[in-house]
Amino acid sequence: MHPMSLHATAEALVAPGKGILAADESLPTMEKRLSRIGVESTEQVRRRYRDLLLSTPGLAEHVSGVILFDETIRQHDTSGTPFPQVLADAGIIPGIKVDAGTRPLAGFPDEVVTEGLDGLRLRLAEYAALGARFAKWRAVIRIGAALPTPGCIAANAHALARYAALAQEAGLVPIVEPEVLMDGNHSLPTCASVTATVLRTVYDELARHRVVLDATLLKPNMVLPGASSHETVDDDEIAARTLAVLRDTVPASVPGIVFLSGGQTPEQATARLDALNRRAPQPWQLSFSYGRALQAPVLDAWAGQEQNVEAAQQALLERAWLNGAARHGRYRT
Ligand code: 13P
Image (cartoon, rainbow, N blue to C red; front, side, top):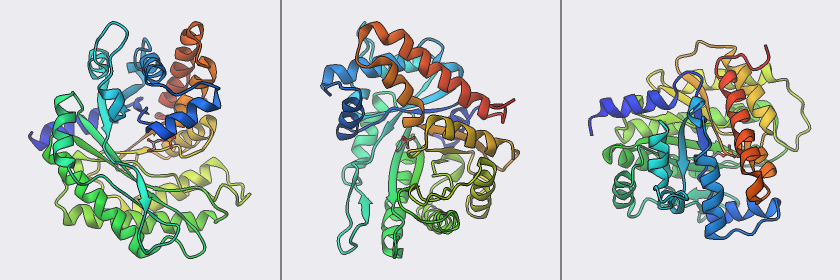
């Protein structure tokens, strides 16, 4: 596929007022999310829940794309239409998580590396045939007393670059996700310096692997104090610190930055996206690719009950609408 159409897809994913719904929870993560609302995670329950999300009327108004999981991209809605087709029919771009999750990095206690490169070329071709137009790979970096190590950052950046090159070869826009976790008692400046180091290493590797940056999106963490640091920082300070790091490290040819929510509450994730966009224009669109921050209220409203489907879809539309407003810096007007 010509890189131009990949660029157009990347731009469509960060169209004004829109962002991405991450609905690509792996089986263990989905089990965790469902057990919180007292629902057993069976294939049929997961299908029903994803059907609820993907068939929400009006979702396309503020959702440009949805990231699916391997199981979900093969499932159908109640009338038998494959989920990628359900999305395409609604004007939403189907995407797919293609990493195989994290494993301990040998020789590096408490650090992980994301697996999934073996056989990835074939899997990407299959996902493209199933209708996916973009992909996601998440690397996880932990901050600790002597962490992260340069070895862990390098291993994860290398894997992200190998993945991104393969995704572009297969005609899919790669979302490059190096997540610096908010777990820990580190300070805001520590998160800023670790995030900057990680992003520098990632863009170095992407260049080495000849990845075309204008056909990629970056999915980073916001720069935040550690969740157990008890440091309170206002949203504008978070936006300023986050943008300072991104402006220092992310090339202007990247069309968009789609933040993960990473354990922030839905309200925090929206308010901070709003604060970021109040500092627009920036070289890239500043958007969202939220999982928990879009879905937590949906799961609560649904509670596994068929009679709650409409209320759950309303909860999704409301969060999407609020994040759509935050895309314009108009969440709090
Ligand atoms: P959260 O927004 O819940 O962090 O999930 C986004 C995501 O896709 C992580 O890979």
